[in-house]
Length: 308
Image (cartoon, rainbow, N blue to C red; front, side, top):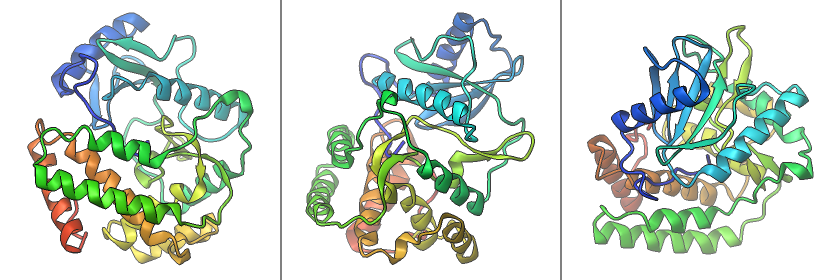
C-alpha cells in the first residue's frame, strides 16, 4: 500500500505475532486448511503466513478497517489473472476477504517455497506492463488521496511526543502546498501503490511477479516510481547500476523530473508516520522513528535509515 495504517482500532487490539497466530488458526478452520507448522514470513502492515500443509499464503491485515482495500486487492488479482499479467493469485473457491477476530483475512496461492526477490530491471518491466493496461470501470478502483492518508496517520500518533507531532504536522502542511503546485508528466491511471522490489518476487519457475495488491488505485504513475528512486538516492539500498537498469527497463527517470524532491519528501514522511503508529508496541520501530524524525528535522543523511 502507498502508506501503512494504524493498529488498535475497532476493538481489534494490538497486532502482535501472538494475536495474529490466533487469527490464523480461526482463518484456517474457516477455509478448511491446516494451520500447524505455518511459517510467519512477515509481520508489518500484514501478518503473512505460508501454510505447511497446503500451497497457500494467508495474509492478515494489521488495519481492522482494511476490508474495502482488501476487497479491491482480490478484484484486482482476479482481473490481472484474466489479463495474463504476472501477479499474485487468490486461492479459488474460498470466500474472501473475510473478517476474523477483528482482522481482515485473505488467502493467496503460494508462489515460492524460498524467498527470492525479482531484480530491479524486472520490477521496471512489471510496472511498465502494469501501467500499459487499461483497467475496466467495473473494477471500481479508488482515487488515491495522499494527504488524506497523511492526516489520518498524524491522528494516530498517540504515543509520540508533542514536539515531534507538531513538527511532523507542520512539515505535512508545507508539503501539501508544494504538492499542489506539482506538474505531473506521466499519464494518470492504475498504480500498484507500494511498488518496490520487496513486492516483486520470483515464482517457482523463476518468473517475476507483483504481490501485495491492496494499494492498487488510480493516481499519477510517478507514485509507482518514487520508492525505487528513494531507496537508491537517499537511503543507499540500491546501487547506481541497479537503479539505472530500473530506469532503462521502465523508460522514465523520475529523478530528472522537477517534482521529484517534493514527492520524495512526502513519501519519506508517510513512511515515518507509519512507523510512528507502532512506537508504543515495538522498540525497534520506536528507535527507527526517532532517527528518521531527527534526520528530517535537521536535514541529515538518510543513509542510516533501516528497511522496515
